[in-house]
Length: 127
Picture 1 (cartoon, one colour):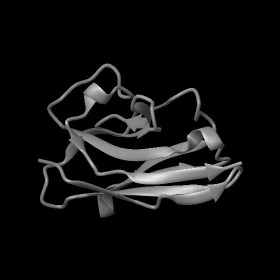
Picture 2: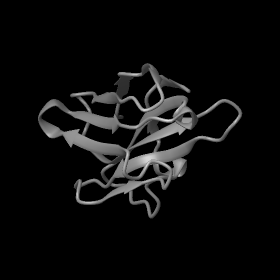
Picture 3: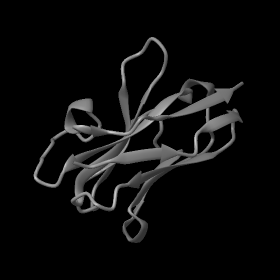
């Protein structure tokens, strides 16, 4: 089992930046692919950014390309999402998600790629 805990959400004006962090439990086996997904009120959860198990491949939703950066610090078992040039439409609850190293997924931005989820952190962007 992988335990995940997000932090770093908050309220920011459009054009601003936030950095989300996801702490991965130290007692867990090393996770496979990991990602950030978000859910706005009344909308389905959607993938934002993800990386494969080896960190060689990163993918982004078209809506955040060029603005968001996903990265991993293996030494501290932390997955981060740097969000720049935020827009009101980025307002959502952001979730960190992970899959076991034995899982393989063809779509890293799909919710079905991840059985492990954090509780999420709220990001609110005002115009």
